[in-house]
Length: 303
Image (tube, rainbow, N blue to C red; front, side):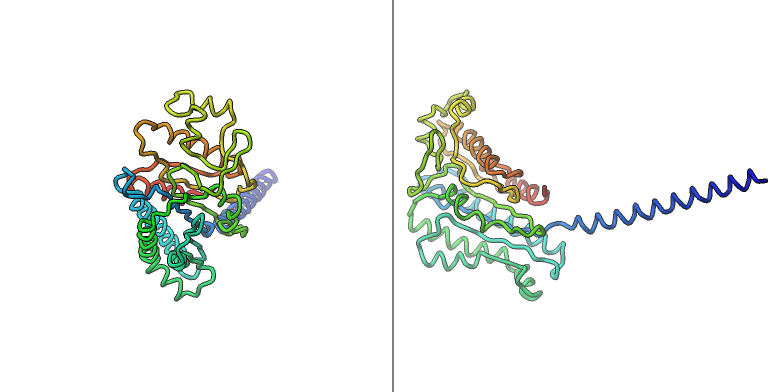
């Protein structure tokens, strides 16, 4: 009899402990789900308005400015989908287009001001307007900028290196509730006539003349050449672990120097790593439908 009572009490205690553990486990899961709420997006798009968009000398089909517009459409469409998934009240995302250097044309600068959206400072009515019009607003205004750029033909280059040196902070929110992403649209030939610096075999630009100098063109051992000479881009910043970078449209139209693309991708990747960026992706120019998928995959998966 005593033995039966002892067994019964033991079973009761084990059952109670098991139930208590299950309750704690469910509580932890709920807390984890709450803490894993996706971060708000802070997306910056850096456009290269160099001669890569010149329709008279570029062999791309479709032309690079057309591809650029489709890329921005894909990004704004993703941003809108993210707003929808969160609900208007909870949408505090940010998205903007930036240039380096700023266009000299005052009309272009006025247009560019319309390409900066900060939902964190908006009421629900304003957010609804963003939701309804963001893609159209960005497309219309960017089309005007590209049209004016093609008319002016002032190909001074895109100063991507100096942008990282002096202006990258404009792309970073230190608030942990935000996920900072910079999308760079460039052919990979980084060059600006007013930024020509080098220390040893490190430069503030990447150009065909450098590829010739270091014998990287049509050389199957180009990677070895780069490693042996420590050729690359000067590192002007570090500690950028809270920034994700997606580089699109790296390309060369020269059928004689197709390895330029591989060299640029390799050098750019090393540069981003040396600045402390832990998540990045670099893609060659492709049809918009394939680029769109890459954009969606990159933006939907956080660190």
